[in-house]
Length: 217
Image 1 (tube, rainbow, N blue to C red):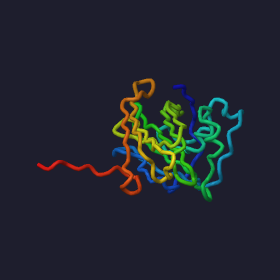
Image 2: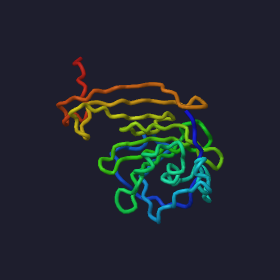
Image 3: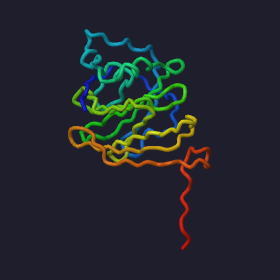
Image 4: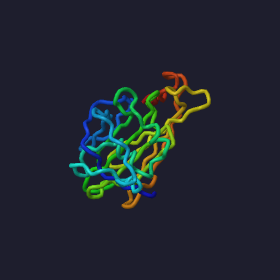
């Protein structure tokens, strides 16, 4: 997968943002996730003179591997689709519908960044992106802009959750779910496993799988 490189944007403050209903992270350790709210004035969109054409934004005082401004990274990245950028606006006030996870998923010495962009109306995942630290820059090494999608870190692997909807399904009650596991091979992510689950239509309106029944001994 082609990669776009971005540099960290100016100092940002993080607070609780839009709720997604997901954990944003499957395993423990140094990885962590948080929804993002811009508490200051929004940063101006980079122009071609400050490196937007190559996916660069002004460098911050921090280092790669520290907290980042995911909104600035996405807007400066030429590999991110125009629709994602156009709709990347606060849901209310200054709160952006963006989840950020920090953890090891590409095997490098620094933590990687997993960014999920959600919709304000229903909190469904609209796009998932992975950025690998390269010195003082971040490189886009994975992206999926086919909603609904949500990416998480699971014991060093990248796991994508994709709800599956039938024609008559409500957004809150998908018919099933695809769970796709990717692993870094040193150069890119490759698919390792894919699990499909069909939800029961008699349990919580089809929102969860029916409980398994163990045979009696």
